[in-house]
Image 1 (cartoon, rainbow, N blue to C red):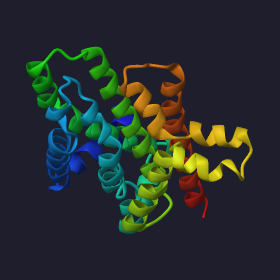
Image 2 (cartoon, one colour):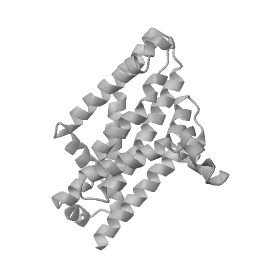
Image 3 (cartoon, helix red, strand yellow):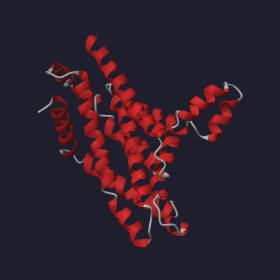
Length: 244
């Protein structure tokens, strides 16, 4: 068994030995359903698509993903098991990747369990299932970016509460970065190039493009590079801790 696979299995097992995983899944599914069919005016729109469903995902992840990732490294540091983990025959990158993949797969399970909503839309009408698939892909990639941010910031502190707050703060800043109100606020103080760069950093902008069924390589690359970048930053933070 590879070191990454061993860490992944250990982390997945740790999710389900406590009620946390089941509470997360129930809350995610209930909120996704309520916000889609009621808050999202699913029936009033008169369209057989899942746009109201995907619109709420960033805001669900904003609360629920930090709750999953806050314990990732902070609990190891607080419980004194971080030193034991780092003494095992595996690299920091392997440990980080195993923990990240476990959390990302867990979020993927939560997404997969929303399939009744997709079945409902197909029963009520004839949606473009290619667009629906793109929406699920974009949602999972966005969740991966959230998880990578949480993994990095959990490595920064011993407190799970601090890790939660830091992750939620960074995620909301990345979601709002490309909003017109934010860009207008900085338009008079920053050069146009920096405004365009700020707009490109918007996670919401890239997700919404994919959710509309437009699989642009630039949007896919944004999420992949975001995941890799935050994981590398997390490994560097752990390396600093080990040196100290």
